[in-house]
Length: 121
Image 1 (cartoon, rainbow, N blue to C red):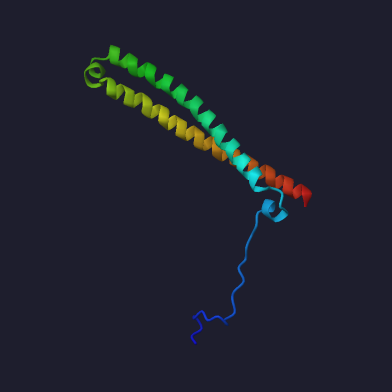
Image 2: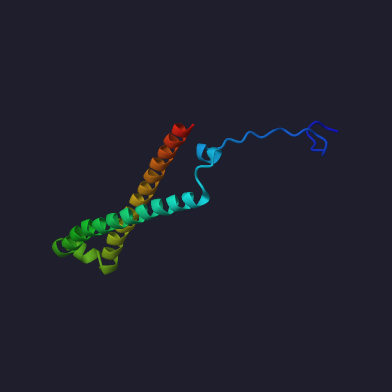
């Protein structure tokens, strides 16, 4: 047979599997991981909602003021355009802040878990 064929009697190469310290020591159960993920995502949702409210206020005031004061904005920005400007800023702020918060929380938790696993080793 050719050297590249996969016969049942051919020797198999051992796979190198690298486990994280938590999986290797068995410190974190599936329930703990799910609770941590839920908490991280909840923190992201709360932070994103706060950012969206602030972005809505920060965008609505100049948008509505410009429609009242500037002739160009009065003629070219109807209600739908104003709503689109305000809501797109709020949506962008929500997703950016929520994503950054979840990643920061996950990073913090991974460093904390690595520190704990080094202490117990």
